Structures are given as C-alpha cells and as structure tokens.
Image 1 (cartoon, rainbow, N blue to C red):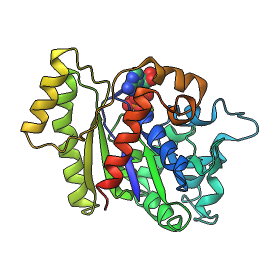
Image 2 (image 1 turned 90 degrees about the vertical axis):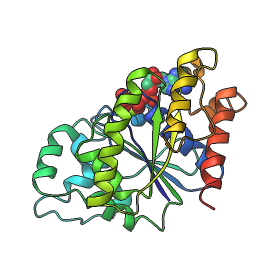
Image 3 (image 1 turned 180 degrees about the horizontal axis):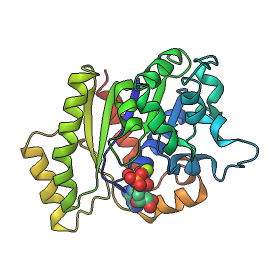
Image 4 (image 1 turned 30 degrees about the vertical axis):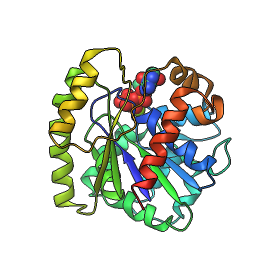
Length: 262
Ligand SMILES: Nc1ncnc2c1ncn2[C@@H]1O[C@H](COP(=O)(O)OP(=O)(O)OP(=O)(O)O)[C@@H](O)[C@H]1O
Ligand SMILES: [Mg+2]
C-alpha cells in the first residue's frame, strides 16, 4: 500500500502528516517506509535529525543515490533497499532526501526517468507493508514520480482562503496525471489540518468543499504547539505524546484510512 501526501501549496502539513501516519503504522507493527522527495529535507530532519554530510555523501544517499544509479551506464545495479536507512523506531524506515535533488531533477527529467520511482518501489513491495511519500510543494519531477508510483493520494488542506483556490489547480493536475500515467491512482481524501473550530472561516471552507463533492476525511486535525515540539525533538507524536489530543486525532485519521481499504 503506497500513499503519497501532496499539495502544491506550501506549509499545509504534508511533512507532519506523512511522518505521523507512518510512525503510527510502524507502531502498529507494519514495516513502514517513508520517502522524502522534498529537497528541503524536512521529513528526513524530523525523523533522523542532522545528517553528518561526511559520513553520508549527498550524491550517494537515499533518494538521490537511488535516482543517480538510473542515469548513464550505472543502471539500477543496487537493490533500492540499499538506499534505505533505519530510524530510531522499530519498523520505521526512511529513504532520505538530499540537497543534490535540485540539480539532479533537470537531468532526470531530460532523460525521462519519471517511472523509475515506481519501478524501484515495485522491487520493494515484498519488503514493506506500507509506504508513505512526502513531496515538495511543487508539481515537479519528484511529486509527479510519487503520484505515478502511489496507489492513493492524500491532500492536506490548511483551511486558509488561498487553499481553496489552489485546490482546483491541484485537482486538475492530479486528473491529468491519472489520465496520462496512473489511471489507478485514487484520491483517498482531503485531510483537514490546523482546524480551528472556534473560528468561522475553517468550518465554512470545509462545508463548501463537501458541498462540491470533494472527498473530505471525517477526522480533522487541530492546531497544536505539540506539532512544532514534535518536529523540534525529532520524535513523532505517537512516541512523544501518545495520549495528546492531536495524537488521538492522528490515530483516528489512520484508522479511518485503513478502514477505507477494507
Ligand atoms: N496540526 C498542526 N498544528 C500546529 N502546527 C502544525 C500543524 N500541522 C503543521 N504544523 C506546522 O506548520 C508548519 C508546516 O507544516 P509541514 O512542514 O508539515 O507542512 P508542509 O506542507 O510539509 O510544508 P512544505 O510545503 O514547506 O513542505 C510546520 O512548522 C509544522 O510544525
Ligand atoms: Mg514538507
């Protein structure tokens, strides 16, 4: 089961949602792989902290290393698992991002490597029960590769008034990608994040989305300082604050998504 978390709008909660759902999946005993396709590397930083650049040369590691070997004569020689890192949590694994992804992108694009992530993940099908993919806030080579490789897409929505406008463009992009590359890709749900039930606007925005027929997930995620603390401590919520309200909402969201697969 491969899920990509995507919204081309920045700061909507892609990284927070990817890492926290993946950490819950791992805590429930599923071998879970997180893939960080964003050059900002926020997921990588969240899960493993600062990386020793000397010990792990940027070009050879994680996503960059995986894609690099698809270029030129060094064909997919290593198993994709060779680029996967362990994390401090049992069952939770990471294919980290790297700063070299920006210049690698042009090369990969010009050589039509858009299906390589899908091919690599097919080779890992037997290794991992769940794959969660974090994407950059752009509809670029990496996010397209993820949408092609995934079974479903989750769309975080941060309840501000620009979020609604960008959703139309986003849905158009997804529809085009489904048609051209991945007809099986399912829009699993829009995840309402940073919801504030005290304010009027978020409730109105969500009601409008539902009226327009968007598949909005029933579980909403509230705003909480715990999220920032969790990033700062490099500990997903399920580990840092297992009974906090936001963690319970993530558990509900996880259960809602899993139930939808039955
Ligand atoms: N439910 C929440 N409550 C409080 N803060 C949150 C919540 N969700 C996300 N944040 C904060 O909002 C910021 C953006 O979140 P995050 O990095 O997950 O978004 P993103 O979509 O991955 O951003 P980018 O587009 O830059 O990759 C972070 O500082 C994060 O801690
Ligand atoms: Mg992010």
